[in-house]
Image (tube, rainbow, N blue to C red; front, top):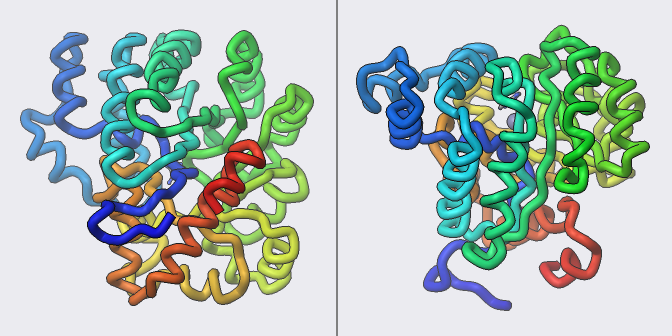
Length: 326
Ligand code: ADE
Ligand code: ZN
């Protein structure tokens, strides 16, 4: 259906969103209070002032530290409801949501608590927010391959709630091939596969994600542009790339938004989508990212529509539902 500004943000799918990265300072302090956790920041403002990052690792340090407030099923449900309400206001109709089980099990929170809490909220998403959802369980690549395998086995009883596995955290030094075994198990179990690659890591990591892990999508992937043959492969197979423009600026993957390679990626014929990554930390949710690239890169209406259409094309929605959006 035709949309104009008066209808609000146009419909889109969010395909790269870490639920832990939606933890806003306000909710972090509320949960800290509820759980008797002391944060190393006195006020929300003081916390917000810490959101100045020099690279991926400097962000991850704060991201993992703030997760200390997430302890109970209720906490994960409340976090997810807060995200869904914001996503609805941004025109998100479908969300494929990452979570990091090892970031919680390492603190003594069982994987079942995490998944039960998340799914309790997600089970209401269609009715309450008009958003269909999928869950993607990510392995922390800076942990061992054995830890990923143990996490997968611990999550086996819950695999009916999980659509795909993913790979995130500190990229450089942790190539996708390290996780070949757990990805093979995930595929055997009927799950889809995605992986962060080519954010800070080199093009060779994108090749490995494709050829060793057999991913259905690449998260970020912006560094693919350094390798012509890789671009040709991604174009030929129409492998989706979930690009996160505001994240790329805040983590200094690129200089400023006006220099973002998004237009070059579209021009090359890559199946690019626009996403928010960790919106509580990077200054914007899904439509905020669309608006920011529109303004910084002078994207026209047709390009924005292509990006929105790509987000559904690249989704794990069933074929008829996906087609209905295109
Ligand atoms: N975990 C949360 N956000 C991430 C990102 N942008 N890259 C890698 N790991 C992450
Ligand atoms: Zn990410």
